[in-house]
Amino acid sequence: MVVSVIAAVVVVSLFIIKFAFIKRGHEVVVGVGGNSSRHLPPLPVPQFIYYGSLACNGGVVIPGNSLIVLVYHVHGTTLINYVSISIDVPLTVINYSLPGPSQPGMVMGMGVYLNGTLIATSIASPTTAIATIVNTTYPLGNKTVSFWQYARAANWSVIHTGFVAEFPPINATPDDVIAVAIYSSIPYILPSCNVSSEAEEVQLMVSNDWIGFIPHYPNATPTTMQLYIEGTYITEEPIIYIATAQGLPRVIGMNNLTIFMKNTAPDYVIARYW
Image (tube, rainbow, N blue to C red):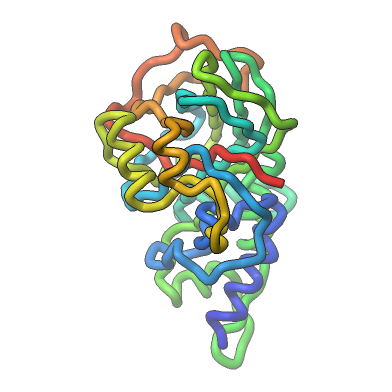
């Protein structure tokens, strides 16, 4: 009973990040706790075509006061209007960065870039959801306790959340490069895959059924195999770039970036939804 109550409160708190629950159509990427699973019961979701998607168990720690950039390559012709990136924020970071609801102490944002130019920013910051969660009381046994008391009792270590950006549909072609930049004043963790090439990513997406029509209704098209056979998908360059910044720039030039980590592709969704 306690678990269901806390889950309901977390869901309500985080729903301000529109559609952040749908990472795979059948799994949820928000929740609390180092041991909590990302694979939670399904929620009603809109219809999607995922052109690119990863959901892995690895993780990379990103330092605070930094701008990271993820680069995506378009294969075939896709119509997209949605980008999602998962993150985990350690409770130790939140504890010293979020002293109270009137003093959030955290700045986080995500921008989507087409051929170097900013076309969309995240519709809500994870910091707002986190502030709501940690300043809410929760039932524990026959009493009500603070978030921190509950987290200690449950041995939680992180909050699972993420960024979502929406924009008018664009036709992305192989001539286009999509980039996603995330700025954060605090350190956080990027769930990620350990891969050495975009070809390896495609095999992961196909073998795990991570692209195609989501949710996977009977006879819904396109299927994973249809997109794969047609060569229509979006892959992530398995490199995390980093720069020193105080926010999201209007234009991103790759010459101003340095490589932070190779052979790593953070979890993402690039999709068309309606």
